[in-house]
Amino acid sequence: MNILAFGPNGSGKGTQGAIIKEKYGIDHIESGAIFREHIKGGTELGKKAKEYIDRGDLVPDDITIPMVLETLDKSKDKGWLLDGFPRSLVQAEALDKALKDAGMKLDYVIEIVLDRDVAKERIMGRRLCVNDNNHPNHIAFDAIKPVEKDGKLVCRVCGGDLTTRADDQDEEAINKRHNIYYDDKTGTMAAVNYFKNVSGPKVISVDGSANIQEVSAAIMKELA
Image (cartoon, rainbow, N blue to C red; front, top):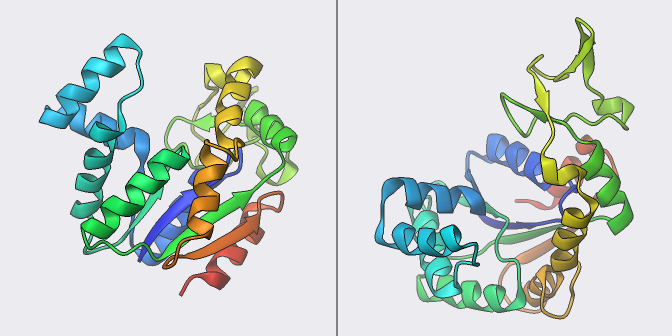
């Protein structure tokens, strides 16, 4: 089973990816981890990507796509869920062609739909567990509110320390990320719409405003 997962920052996409990974035994591949793996491993693609990253530039698609494909190919026997890529219409078109050229079938596209203002509120209230970023903790939602221990808030799942990402508290940074995601002309939403109009993968759109269990149940109902 091969899956692309889409959802704005704050939609719980990473959490749902972890749930799907556990249930189906597939690899949950996050785009950022692909870069880190190649750079740490000193691959030719990793060296080229690092040059752009060190300059603060975006890594070109002719480097990113082969890097993504190489990582997906390692998981072809288990199956994979790719999270965080593609982020634009151009990348969606290139990835679709590359997957087909490689004989790699895309089975599902999951879209977690969430209002932009709600997504921003979720980002600013979320807290990250130092043991597992996919442990859900949020100061504004009772169901996943961190617990208090010795006068401080800790992870509700494992009791680990909690941190915040600096850019999670930066509205300008959040808006930049969301400007890319919600752009339905050339951005990530355009990529989502592209896959809705190609033959092959089944597109599963779910309401991201529901709780974690409800979103998960809606996704699982559609997965074979």
